[in-house]
Image 1 (cartoon, rainbow, N blue to C red):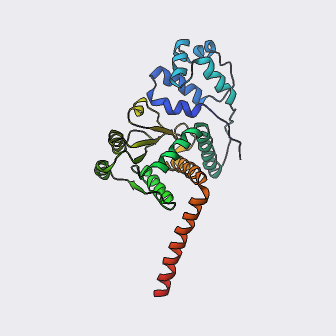
Image 2 (image 1 turned 180 degrees about the vertical axis):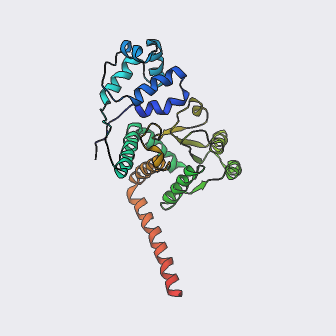
Image 3 (image 1 turned 180 degrees about the horizontal axis):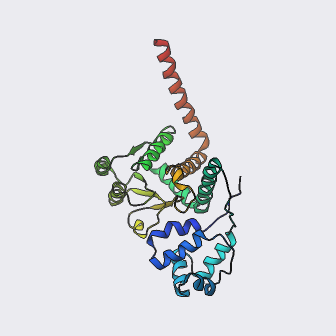
Length: 279
């Protein structure tokens, strides 16, 4: 198992759709580059035919003060990745490893702690998503309801619109959308925000507009720019983040929640035992 190293490539990928065409050209260079070269602004600008000013604007779009800070972090975490010849199994496993490394690079422990606080404070939690993201929302419901969280999952756009009516400032809405463009999810988040509810979007596409209606933007690892990324379930990066939030939640009040989980299991076992007795 490779050790995890913080990388800024996932940050570039998260901001990719908000970049100009010139900035996307710069992003493509840093995402796909496999060779250690002279990363000075002058040399990179000459190599990819852009201006040094464009490099500076690109670095700021990625959250850095300028190109010098950006390239310092890039060089610090740069790893030479040879084009390994591997069988199908290794290719898939390596892709999972890359996704886990990306998740580690994007992790903001302070932010996850805030999300967990929202979960504790909310009287009602709604998790929503469409397609694969909807299945992940359902998994979140299954995980958290077992430890006493009043949570529902929504996978249908019409239900999202109807449920928006019943939200209030004591609600928490968790929206899952890798693309960040799922209309039903965005609608529910916006309506929840208007009613004073806490709102969290889990997405691989960081956009400035989320600040208008989301309490938190939790970035997920992107499947883009990965070899054989299309072979990996799009649920995977969402499920990994749900597991991380779940672990933080359990650890926050480990004994109480562990007891509640055991009570749930005993209730299920008791029900199964009664069913067998009846038969």
